[in-house]
Image 1 (tube, rainbow, N blue to C red):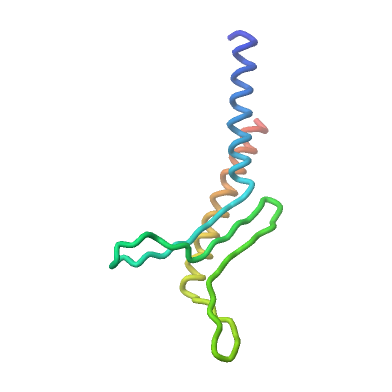
Image 2: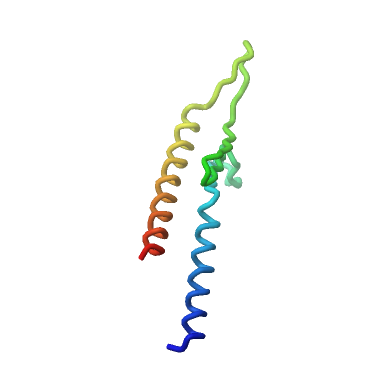
Length: 104
């Protein structure tokens, strides 16, 4: 294999890995709802974004009760948090695999 071919292969591998790292840098989880009886499109019900540095933003629907307190749909919240946890575990496996490849 010529030096040019090796350099090209290394460059392609580096670009591929950089793409994976970029994708893993911000974890985005969306939980959507749909009225199945109406055949409507899904609606965003909750979302979470988590950066590699630990910063995160979550949007969880809540309603204000008559006495002014916020109430969260716990079933939807629990489902969303299960999705978030699954995504965190998956990202962890991907990052570990990438680090393993890079370390040799």
